Length: 111
Ligand SMILES: [Zn+2]
Ligand SMILES: [Zn+2]
Image 1: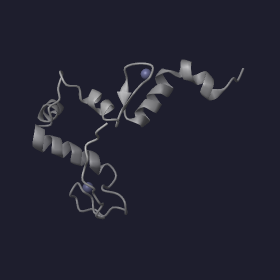
Image 2: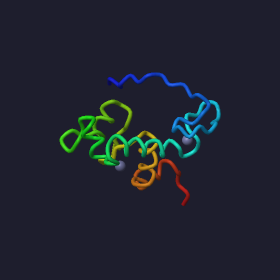
Image 3: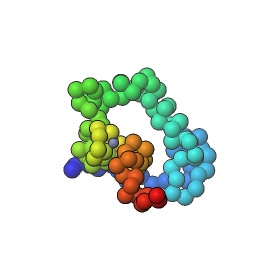
């Protein structure tokens, strides 16, 4: 696993979307403003196209970004099917999609 080393960022007390709102210590964004900033970045740099974003980073139909996320260890693959996602998403997915298999163990016998 060779997770890309990202620079260490420190929250500054104001929202990083640029709206100048004060945010609590430890937060980069006012609630929801991370999504606004993400959308704005996508609009400015990639014409609001996720396909352009992927292409710009060397990903696309022949080079799966989700497979890369799994191989980098930041995402997981569901042990029971092809679903991939962040560890929290996998937990949620497993609960919803595979309750028959996991349910008995987790919930015990109530009959
Ligand atoms: Zn903001
Ligand atoms: Zn699954």
